[in-house]
Image 1 (tube, rainbow, N blue to C red):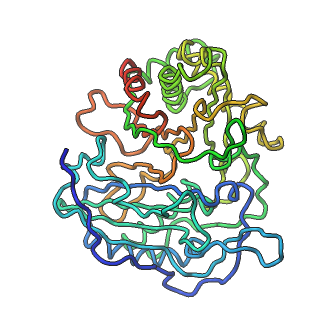
Image 2 (cartoon, rainbow, N blue to C red):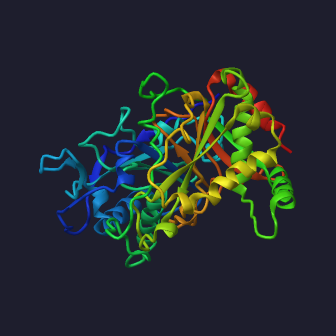
Length: 432
C-alpha cells in the first residue's frame, strides 16, 4: 500500500481573537462536566479549490473567535476552594497548523476512505494523552492542502466546551467569514442560565467495568462501512407495515444503528457468556429543542439513551424487532428528560465493557453546510485519539461517492477488535 507524506508548512501557531474579548469565566453545565477532558476530531474533506485555504481559514478563524471567545480560552480551577473546573476566557487562542500533502491528490487517497493511506493523526491535532490537559488549547485546527487544490480541515476539540452540533455551528461561522460575510448568520450563545440540567448517562471516560477498573484505551479496528439503501428502505417499509399504526415513524438512524448492533453482537457472541447475557446500546440524543435551549447555543446539549436486551434477542431476533427496541427508546426521551439521572448500565444491569456499544449520529448537525468559499465538503469523517468503548458514527453527511453501487449510508466505527473484524464485516456484507 502506497503511503503519502504530510508535511507541516510552518510551525504551529496560536490564533487569538482579532479583537478584544471579555476576560470572564464560565461555569460548565453538568453535561459539559461529564465530557471535560475527552477529545474528538472531525475531518472535513473539500475537493474544490479555495485561494490560499490555510491563510484564508486562519484569518476567518481569528475573526470568528471574537464571538466564540470561550473556545480561545483554557480550563482553570475555581478560586473559591470548591475545586470546580471553569472555562477561563483568556484569549490565548486556538492552535493552528498549516500542512501539505504535495505528492498526492484527494483521489489518490480515496477521499480518506478505507483502507486509509494517510493516518488521521497526520491530518489533525492530537492532545497526546488519554485526556486533554488543563493548559491545553480547547480546540486545534489543521488545514492540509493537496496537489489537486483540494484540502482537508481537521478540527480537534475538548468535548467539554462544545458538542458536535456546536462545533459545526462554529465552523459554519468561520466559513461564512472566509467567504466574505461581514458577520456570522447565527449569534452564538455559550452560557444559558435558563436551561435545565440534562439527565446524564455516565460518559465513556468514567464508565467502569466489573471490578471497578476505569476503562482504558482499546485498539479497536477502524471500519468504514456503507449500509445499502436497498436494505434501509426495505427495513423501514417493514417496520411501518408492522408497527406504523398511522403515526409511528422509522428513521434511517434507527435502521442503520440496529444493523450495526446486530452484526456486532453476532460477531462477538462468543464473548457474551451465554445468549441471555445483557448487551447495551447507548445512543446520543440532541435535546436542544426538548429543553428549550436558546438559538445559537453551542455548549453540550445531549443526553444518552440506553437500550438493554439479551445477546440472543439482538443477534438472533428479526431486524425489525431490533429496530423497535431503538425506536421505543427514542420515544421515551422526552419523558425521561424529566427524571433524575439514569443508571449508566440500563436499569441495574451489569453490562461488561465489551458488550456495550455507543452510537452518535452525525446527520443533521450542520457539518454538511460548512463552506470556506468553494462549496460544502465532499466527505465528513469522525476520529478519536482515545477509544475506550466500542463506538460507531452513522449517517455521516456528504459521503456518497461513485462506485458504491446503489449507494448507502456511511458509518465509521471502532466497535470490534481485530479478533472479530472479519466476522463483523462478513455479517455486514449480508445486508441486502
